[in-house]
Image (cartoon, rainbow, N blue to C red; front, side, top):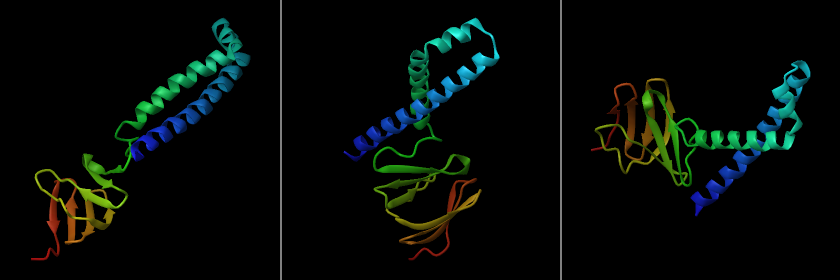
Length: 147
C-alpha cells in the first residue's frame, strides 16, 4: 500500500514539475518570437494552450522515465538505494534495515547501524561488528568480527 501511495506522490510531483517547465517553455518561446521573426515560431506561440499541454506531456514522460533510472530512483515504496562509486549501492528497506550486497559474499542478516563513505571505501558498523567494504575490489574486510 505504501508503494501505491509513493507512486501517486510521484505522479503528482512529476505533473507539477512538468507544468512549471512547460510554462518556462512558453515564456522562452514568447521571448524568442519577439526577437526572431520566424513564421513557424509565430504560429506556435499563437496556440499557447496546445504548446503548454504538448510540452508538459513530453516533459512529464521524460521526468517519469528519469525517475526510473539509477540516478533518479529514490526507491519506490518501502525500499531505497544509495548509489556509490564503481556501480555499488547501499540498500535500505522499511526505513531502518540497511544492508549491502558485495559480489560473491553473503552479507545477510547484518543490520548496518552507521556508515561513512569515501570514494573507494565504505566504513560501516553492524550489529555483528565493524567492517570495511573496498568498493573498487568489491571485497569486505572485517576489523572486529566476534567469534
